[in-house]
View 1 (cartoon, rainbow, N blue to C red):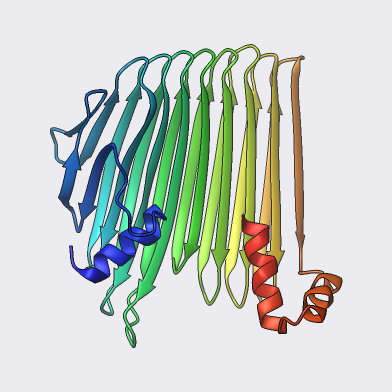
View 2: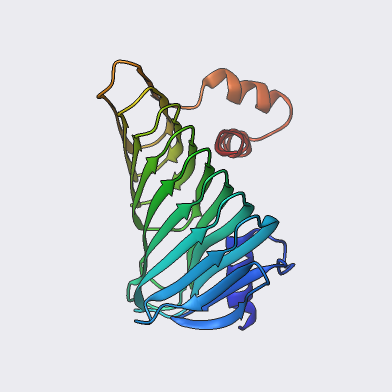
Length: 308
């Protein structure tokens, strides 16, 4: 990898130029730039060449697996499928995401499907970051369409944090989950759009087991002429708890649409939704300006705090 590609990788992993330990697979322009399995986490290529399989042995604790993607070619497009099988009684962290540096005037695109089968009693934290940039004077678009499918066995937990840092011109994000008995799902996303960018996000959680729960949270900031669309749906098919929340900051000529939905198919399904869209409060700006910040610095500080 050259210095430009390493910098993009650092943006995705947020590791401050320190390569993480543990299992790893770095995909660069469709090829495996580096792969490392461990005694408990095995990474293998899918037979059809479409991506990788990640198998995590039962009782694996306090281990990390990183599978970032970097694209540095203009006009390059790919569809990648990564399948995770997590055994029972595990506690692991998985770091993924994609960074695109488009050096030309053609569109570069990464579409991905991640599937997670989480075994009984296991806990998974999944961190996904997306970042894009263009070479100076170039107009090539950066497109990402990530899909995630999650299947949680009894007493398991999955927490997913998905962040679109900046520079993605178009994205359609889909996350679907089936949550079993006493299992817990937490989905958190943070989206930032500007210019003419478009971001669409869909979250669907099916609570099928008694005592299952889901918390779907989206925070977004849309400025200039960009647009963000958020759909969420929780289907309660057992005695369960579900909550979905969308908070957005809007500015300039941007547009935001939030469509939360609840579907209760059981008398003991407890489901709640919240949605709020608004501009930055004037009193917040004034307070920061009195501390010496410019209007632009104050707005940036508020946005960064909101998206944390």
